[in-house]
Every structure is written in structure tokens, then in C-alpha cells.
Amino acid sequence: KTIIGQESIDVPAGQFKCWKIHWTFPESSWNDDIDFYDFISPEGLVKRVIECRNTEVIDEELSFVGYCNITEERYLTGYQIAD
Image 1 (cartoon, helix red, strand yellow):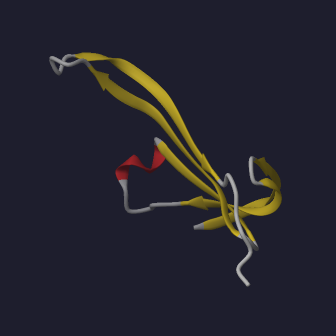
Image 2 (cartoon, helix red, strand yellow):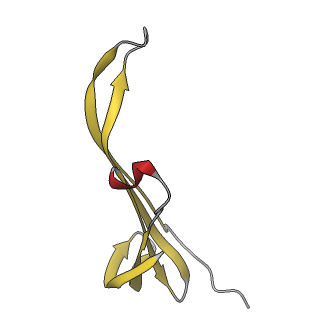
């Protein structure tokens, strides 16, 4: 993991000042096509972004259709401070 900076993130749970962390997998051949980013605040994990490039698409008969790019985001929708 590498800290690549700080960002202010707006999610449904509120606004958070976060460290942006890039996951790296140096031993993997797919490292150039997939990026993982975590946004961490003192409250915990606020947001995770996974970007996949050049993903092969096949149909239900397993025939090649083409390539696509996919971005998946997961984010904090609420939280409660423990007593």
C-alpha cells in the first residue's frame, strides 16, 4: 500500500478528510489493469474504489464480445461513535 495524498471526501455519511491509499501488487501480472484505492479517516474506511481496465467480456455461450472498463465504489452510508 502507498499513501498518495489527502482528500476531502463527501459520502452519504458526511464529509471526511481522508488519506488516499493505493494498493499495489508488484508480484501480479494484472497490476497494470486493476487499481484499488482506499480512503481512510480517523473514523475508519470511508470509501473504496476499484477500477478495472480492459476487462474481457463474454456472452452466455462463452464467445468473446469485447473489452470494457469497470469502476466499483463502496462508501460509508452512516456510522455511530461507540460509547
